Image 1 (tube, one colour):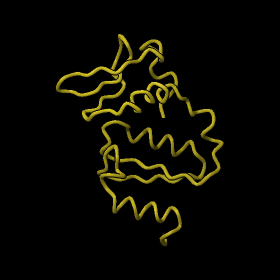
Image 2 (image 1 turned 90 degrees about the vertical axis):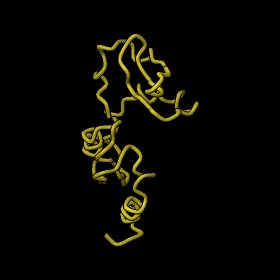
Image 3 (image 1 turned 45 degrees about the vertical axis):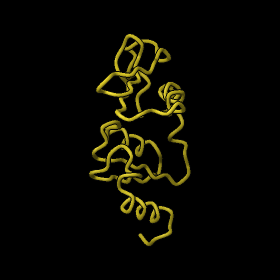
Image 4 (image 1 turned 90 degrees about the horizontal axis):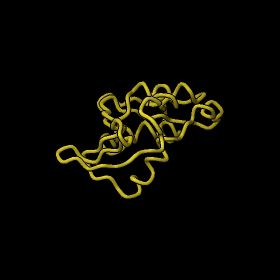
Length: 129
């Protein structure tokens, strides 16, 4: 959850592009500005289209209105999304639960399946708490 004003100094939020940098990977950046996301793995065509839209979405105004059970999952070793962003998301959604996977990376669903599976099953009421 990024503040809508967090990158104003980088210019027009809609002026983004993907570039390939050898030895680094796919870089999503502001044209004539900073990198916003770096992926050492190949980025799908769908993600290349979605990322500019996702980058402009501001959820601040409506997150506090959510009234559904919400589980926010964060990996402590996530090199892409800081834990502080997951905590801010959790704090913005009333009644949400935060599942912090200490050594989980950006995709704890694929990296920590047994631990995550049991936590999600507990959240869904499929296992005792």
